[in-house]
Length: 273
Image 1 (tube, rainbow, N blue to C red):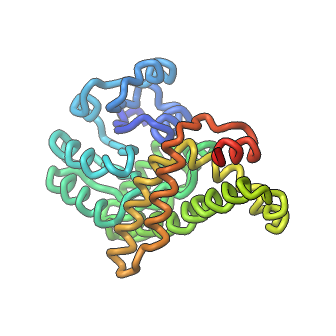
Image 2 (image 1 turned 60 degrees about the vertical axis):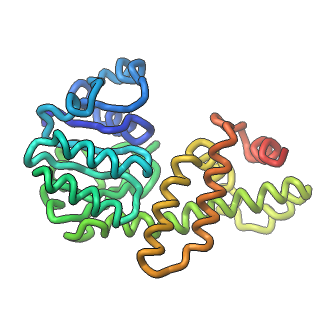
């Protein structure tokens, strides 16, 4: 596969994919931040404009923050070539995906709703992907050609893949938020060993990892959970707990503990101050 690939966004997901797949100069990357050092290190083609990144590309992958996903799709639609496959891998509500699809399809592009179902590091291009939409058969073939090895079609309607992702996040990221709330209080009360000891070993072992994810990615995850709120509201479910998850994820992300202190006890001492 020697066609160029457009990557919109070069954060954790975009950079992990480019490096794991060995795309190098075939990846034409646009990011709002100055990432020239990262581009040079990974030997990808950094582009100064979105139009430049899309020029001559058959495939475009959008991996940006949730609050920018629709804006990016609308911007891509102004220059996308007819027939280009646009993979929207952002963690947003199904209605947001459908609005993005309308913009891409009206411009002649082919939109695929894609959901990344686990952290991309260390999975890389073996990360589980769900895709849906009328072009998902072509999307499956293209993703395979790009090197992705764990892709599953979940339906012909845009929004189905993202619905699965959003509702899964209600649980997963909600548990993260509850973990932080519980353990910070335990640290302040001096009962952390007793409470952790009352849980099973699997839960306790995951606590350090959950705090890590929020401290490093809490701001981005908060934006994603705001989209989960929209998903629940669309389904007629009052998102009381998920709204609180939005706030807790944002609060931990704003602390600036990146990289986080090493070890659960060190993290909790820093958070309990």
